Image (tube, rainbow, N blue to C red; front, side):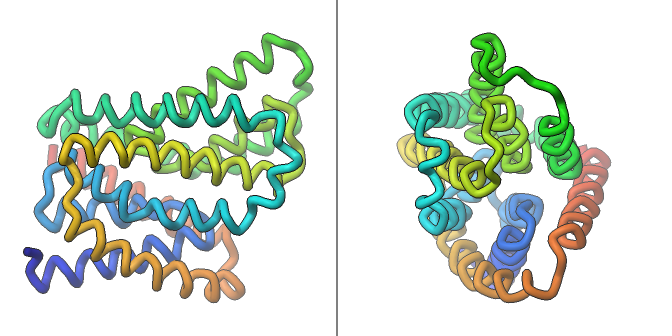
Length: 254
């Protein structure tokens, strides 16, 4: 059972995460620390957090699936890369165990903060670069790059969205709607297979995951409304500041 204080914490973090995800992404910066603060070990917090956030990426994919036609030639390869990468990333979490994964948390938050903050710049840089997308070596590198993102997605995943968009420019995609549709599909695949691995290992705390999921659904709706008023760059700044503060706090605790 979850006490009232932890329930309020999880609902509140889920609400904030769902709202910020709807505007700019970055829910994990709110939700994962809340899972740990609610008393879960690092592995269980990561697994439960993945379950709690899964509906948001899947709903985003469903909303944009009609734009996949512009990226149809990548669907099979992304299916393979997403499933294998997500499974391997989740397996690595379980293999590390709670103590070693907890030691990774400050570094994961640091990496996620950097990825999240640098994501838009990375996308712009990739688009501006004179990359010969038709070359086999470039396309191979693009798929290898995406495979590593898939592994990271199954392992932790915070900040992977913008990096995925940057990687898609290596594969010659230019239409942002097709890119976002494929990104959401890839995220859903990665999270989905990671959830299967975590559930199989009994790593998910369902009470924590479902309570946070409820807050996230309401927050996602509120964020959709707030997005009409709050610009995405402001939301990204808030998330980057939160990520930086959390990174420093976890390093100091360690």
